[in-house]
Image (cartoon, rainbow, N blue to C red; front, side, top):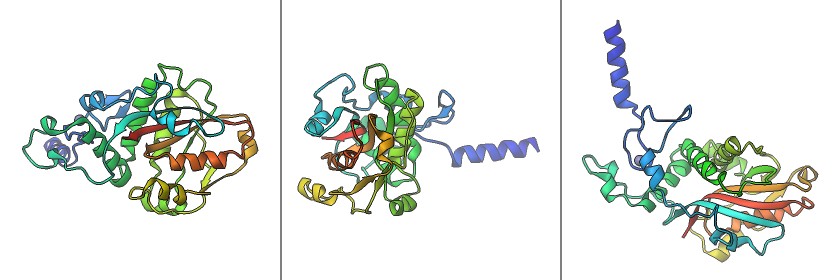
Amino acid sequence: MRLLQYLCDSVASVLFVRTCAACGCRVEGEKDGNIDRYICCRCMALLPRTEHFLLRNNKLEDMFYKEQAFVRAAAFLYYRGDDSLPSMPHWRRGVTFMQQLDRHTMVQALVHRFKYMKQPEVAYELGLKAAKEGILTDFFDGIDVIIPVPLHPRRLRKRGYNQSEYIAKALSEVTKVPMATGYLVRKRDNPQQAMKSGAEREENVRDLFKVRYPEELFRKHILLVDDVVTTGSTIRACMEALRECLWCSISVFAIAIAH
Ligand SMILES: [Zn+2]
């Protein structure tokens, strides 16, 4: 019986072994506190940081500095390329992936995992890491509530989760600032932004969000959370909707900024 158990465990560990979402090495048993890891320590250390937590007037802040009530912004990583599946060397057998995998391809792979491959845990883990680095600075000081950019209910049903909500949950876990969903609502299921130009994106997101119970956000400092920011048009549309909340101030966090 014990032998059978041993065989079953061995087969399961071969078939269902957890591998790093960026490089493909084994992460089975690696833990961050009591949470299973989806990204190995080495990849996590190598990911291309923006250092925005320490830099004011950074590239993300440049996108929003003209917006009413805007305070500060930070993206955790640089993101290069599009959302398509990167050609990942470790998906071919017997290739020494780390020699071929550049740091930007890693970010592309991670984004692809949490956006299209039903692995929101990757977004959560990146959120935890970002928050642990961000909390060492004054970036999260004075934030009252964390609000993820919402998906339209139809998109949410199709994908099964909102990756920005996973990121927001991770930030909330580390900073102890509450996360709130339900205040910001997406009115239309607008077409994907990925293939659109800057002007088309602005048009695509015009009047896209609305705020429910704006009086409850009165005087609050809101941290808007998104996964990847490209032109900032979605965040600007959220800010436009949040104008309804009197005296609120708005900061922005994103896991990655496209460059
Ligand atoms: Zn790795």
